[in-house]
Image 1 (cartoon, rainbow, N blue to C red):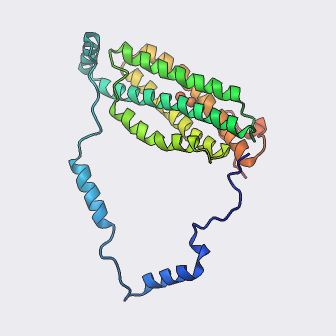
Image 2 (cartoon, protein in one colour):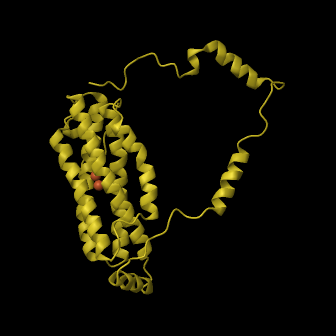
Image 3 (spheres, rainbow, N blue to C red):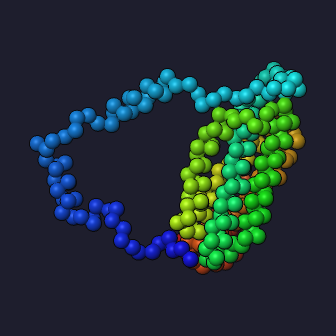
Length: 257
Ligand SMILES: [Fe+2]
Ligand SMILES: [Fe+2]
């Protein structure tokens, strides 16, 4: 089994070379030492200038069907914000798809390691993976129900795709341990929970009662995912099974020490 905390020949710290480190520190402390002109304020100014001039990340697609156009128009008249709902539905769609892929990768990792320091089983992961795929379908149907195109990438879908790239990289990296992979999955599940909560609020604001009902069921499953992943992560990092009493009813784990 991979041990994420094994001692090895790590040479990344400056303490590996005290002589060179002292020389470097002395050089920066000497007033007469050659210095590179400028500081990071120029970088900040350039970033700010680009931000002021930049276009937004994409645009929210207008529903292409007559039904969608009418629905959007009505919502606009009533003062709701259907664009925001469509944008966030696109985000959830993208993230739930990534969620299923993350669990596919975690299943492969578990198979590869052939043993686990946590009580997590392949069947547990397959069940959550199927939940994520079903959540994807729920969001797809919700987008279609308001005449939207689920194949369109909304701005927030684009952003969340970039955000989650790191998580996929961690779990699919053959060198990462189960504990390191579960930490990435934990980030995904926390984001999942917050995402569904916001989506329920937006659906309520837009009077989409069927969505509120479907999304609430999904949120309840996400809460269960989060509680289980926290437990497995804690077990994997400590190398022991965590007893039921270690995690309270709302899923808040006890301190690791
Ligand atoms: Fe999910
Ligand atoms: Fe989840």
